Image 1 (cartoon, rainbow, N blue to C red):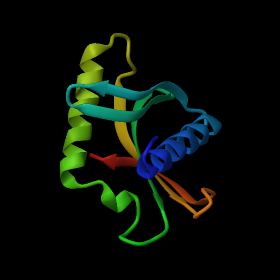
Image 2 (image 1 turned 180 degrees about the vertical axis):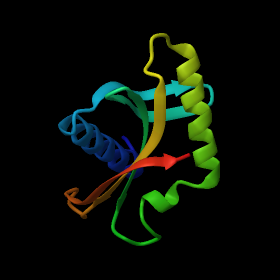
Image 3 (image 1 turned 45 degrees about the horizontal axis):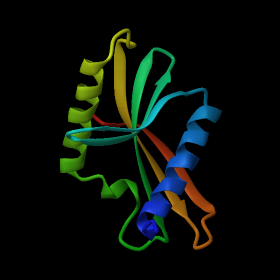
Length: 121
């Protein structure tokens, strides 16, 4: 049986992917895994590859979802994006890393969904 944390994360990732599609992003891949870790969503928006870290939580205790993206996690995301870019051909020239913060109510309804572009520089 999946953990509550995994369940909440999966809900958040689906909501984030739906949000991106609604805003003209083309989803290239979800849950890209390599030796270094995982990128939740890889998308393309105009001439830009967008690597998206989705952070989801229920309730407002212990800070916001986006505050949970630590310095270490940001460094790891840059490394993962670089790994992906090196493994593919014919990619757009530009890329960035975004964060989508999702807050859910106790019954899994969205209380907040925020897309932070260029969250990791």
